[in-house]
Image 1 (cartoon, rainbow, N blue to C red):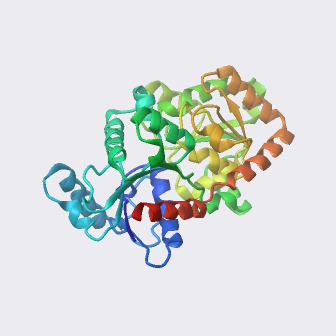
Image 2: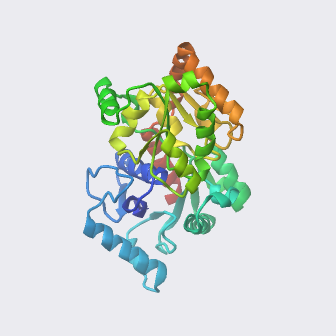
Image 3: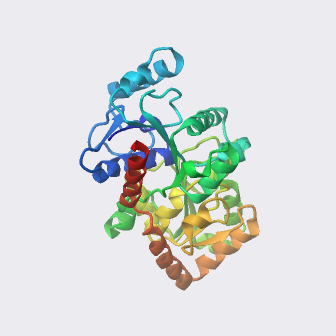
Length: 366
């Protein structure tokens, strides 16, 4: 069996999908058995570090791959037939509209937020998701990263239930094993002298940053004097008013991938009141790093967090404020929640994901 994975999202600025592809491909290669091979379009250099802000490939490889993508999407040239000429299975991304005709088609659906909350997304995101939906409807089989996403795909896209398998994503090993020296170094690098509440993710409406900012502002003055609010992540398509409010807290902007695990481990509390997640990488990463987590009681987050987080209504300022206060005032509760979070996060290993994915592809190839 020869599997060709569309890795074009690794060439552009991206977050969750890029993390998924990077670690998934790496572990698929480890999980492949005799007579099985994993390839990518484009072919990627070995050992390239994950960087959400830039391509994992070199300049010329990136440019040639993006040119090939444009040619296959916007011209009659059968580029993907040539690229996938030896592939038995082609696993597509949302950026590729034409796929190799002789290979069986599979896709991963990460979330349905463009359909459920279209007002929170720019037009380019909605177009890409519409393309992925079209691919999913004609795919031989589909992976959903959570049962929540599977049910949404059945209900919203009309995909047959028997066509979709749930395979949870994983967490990078770096989050499970954070050295104290790395925590100290990241504290010094970002001048984080005080204990802090942390939230990590692109600043965009779905992440509900405004509610977190308001809940923090609603804490007693003494508590805010003792604990900072720290936000890390690139500016996405946040409202200008949200960007202005970031000036009143510690906004770090984009933080390199190597710093995310120690930064997360350094947090007193990790808060992630997202309005919708297909999986929720930041929540699972925070639990793996031992940070006590507050997150939403919607979408996939209860499924993924289990008993390892405090769940709140992400539309309720009072619930988030009270959860923050409760954790900040109780070291014992933070320790208990951190322990439960580590146990829950241990269920989400990339090698487990890759082993289940290879079994999925073996079934597709039969």
